[in-house]
Image (cartoon, rainbow, N blue to C red):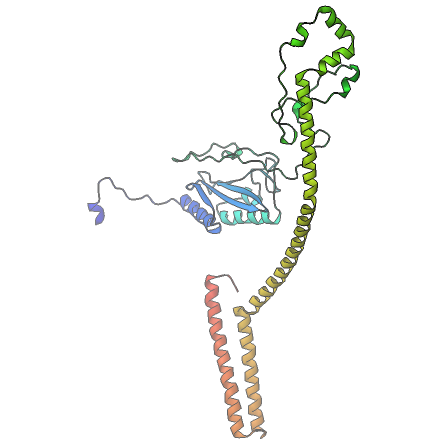
Length: 379
């Protein structure tokens, strides 16, 4: 009768439909199989991060509105290369997902996907963008009160090779006019290109060129014409420019710094070689320890199997049978007159007691095994 005195605005909760109950069972199975799964949007979107050989990927499970009548949409990010993923590297194309029905188990499907990733580790795709919230071109579900956005993942670069034939950046490879051949002009130092960041991170700023040259202001037209006709005079005037002198000085300083750095590198070579040798020794030690660990793990597995409930039950059964046979032999010897009555009573009672004790323990262990098998996997 409590509903007679309930408040006017309160209403009883509507019972779940059959489709909603099946959907909830699928979600419970997914959460039970994977404890570290995170719920992005309740009953709609779930995310499972996994790490395989230093590669961390996220498995995104999107449940449509008519799930489980409609199959789920499972994607991965960042894009990977795997035989269970499409060419774009995001959508999972496993047959278990394509053939999903209302009687399928979503938790086991995701577990099967993880096991396949462990057996055949995926590789990172060359390019990766933002997280695919709208897979397969479907309209995304609106997020309730929480606009969830992931930062873009940085593309991992492995086995990056340094080009040898083109050591300078692309900014230096632009086509330039050929330099005039003015006699000794080829002996001049090569000017450092104007760039904020050069090769190996070295920075250099070219000297500013003036709009006018005061040295040429006082010269007459005939002197300028003579300078143009005589390469030696033009070269001497060019070499006297303060900007060129500054470039030459900077070049000499740079060469000195390179020589000093090369000497330091040569001095560090023995230390580097010793560190390398120590690393190789530690790697060999790691290999030996790994082999020893695997052997001990195998031994521990054998011991655990020998100490299992089923193995102990079998041993107790054999031991009880042996004790019974020994007591029968003692009784036959007594009947044949080979044993005195006092010795017979002592030995016979001892063996029969041992036999019954082992049988009782074997029966008790059988009850424990039967009770354990009702709630756990077979031993």
